[in-house]
Image 1 (cartoon, rainbow, N blue to C red):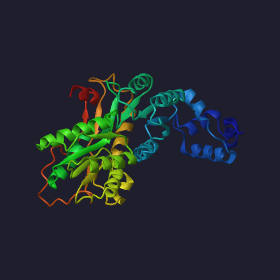
Image 2: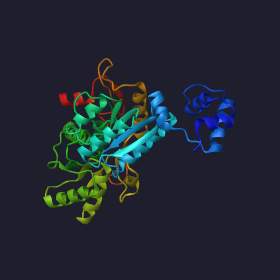
Image 3: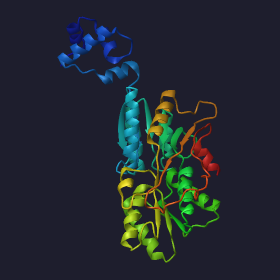
Image 4: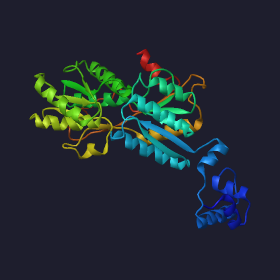
Length: 362
């Protein structure tokens, strides 16, 4: 196997010049850098990233832990983050916690042992994930994305769930729907809790009450289908369903059809995320689009700023980015002028205080 000294002899330069040229640690004359690169390619030399990490105390890698990669939302977020990191010359190591808090903790420890320069995590559980997330945040820069644990642990980046759910409820009400029901995941994670809270608040602004208790299960198609069966069998009139994510909404569309109910004539359905399948569902799904690219940009910005925010004045920051409404055929058409100004106009905001702390004060 060729060594750095072999490359140096082939290129006619010193070993230290080869090291600087291949690692990018210090500027090298462009002509010399090209000569070194040609020599390395001709010899089949591969730079030892582990050795470089030991020398520089940087691995140029970021770790990421997501709850379940089979959920279509997370691959889209991962792709956006990886594209952004590549612009900085940083690699991404992806881990799936498999919906298991113990696995999540092991994945976090494994990433730290591999000397990643930082970690982006969407915690599985608001409470159960907190000890591991807090412990790792004390060792490496850590950003929470989409979901977050309780307490002022680290910076957080995510969509403005309150604005998104608010816009969906406003749209349904403008379309003449008054008997709305919420279907989502059990409120063990912050996204599920925020969206459930936002649904109740949006109905209250319109002077409406829910058409039944929220149906809370899991973020998957089968639960959406089962929830549709429960709605159809309840005997309580429902003319609109706000789902906690698109995957549930896709199951809801099928379940309502199987129960003999038409969408949107009898029951309107909305989702949350705007995954790829939302536009090609039958009927195409009205939803709000998660701002993946903006979320990835903010995660990288905060990581490159260094630390977890705990040493800045005011503590960790929350960056909340407004999602974008996507109106399709799963909701009734709304004529121009029927929709009032949304009570939560789109905005991006950065808060000095922890968004988790804010939530706990509500």
